[in-house]
Length: 279
Image 1: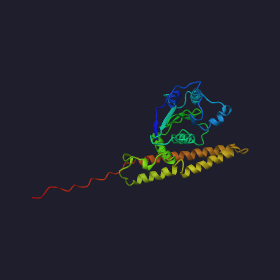
Image 2: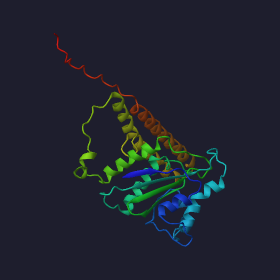
Image 3: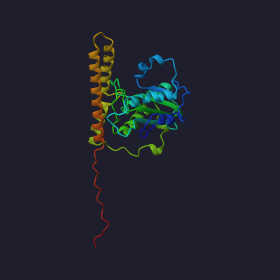
Image 4: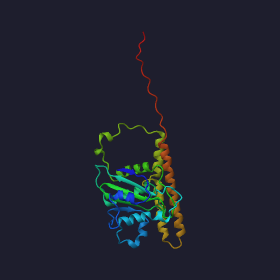
């Protein structure tokens, strides 16, 4: 699975057309077989239109709304607000089911910092699966509340790492299909920095890490508390706490990345045996 990060765009139509492989149209309805995933808040936002199929133009306008409502966010000044990443299956990978594409979309959105747990007024994003073996994630970095949220500086690395984990979880890579050229010649012993980075990465892991489990329990409790009489303030406080846990995970990822990039000591070459003979 190979992710490709595009340059940011000024409007959603350009990445949308690249994802579809054709121009957007006011007459072409897109079903859940094309728009396979989207930002969580859309279900409540579009509950009155649940029986109506949106056209590609309507989807583009929906993504564009926050930019039109908040034309002057704090940053950036270049107006390039639309994030676009596409991911391709490898030639030997099997076809994915609709639910699997949706899982890939949500995991990439979280890895890119587009979908932030506990943030109710976050980014609008959709995932389009319109071409064989390809998924496109398109997001507006101007959030619904008018704030700007740029992806982390190491977003390309995070997407690539998440793609590797997705391959393993969905059984897209089989050792018996690996070519000799793709196999490492030898495995080097990890350095102390690499070992510490691995520990931090495990702590911050979005799927199996202990902090992710704690955050999930907090979010679940918050959503259940929302429906309790007089507990709206408590639910809001819990969601804020979940965001703080998520921020800790982000800090741990950055610390792990810093350790992983620490310079490795290079061993001095062994002294050569002299070939000069004494007279």
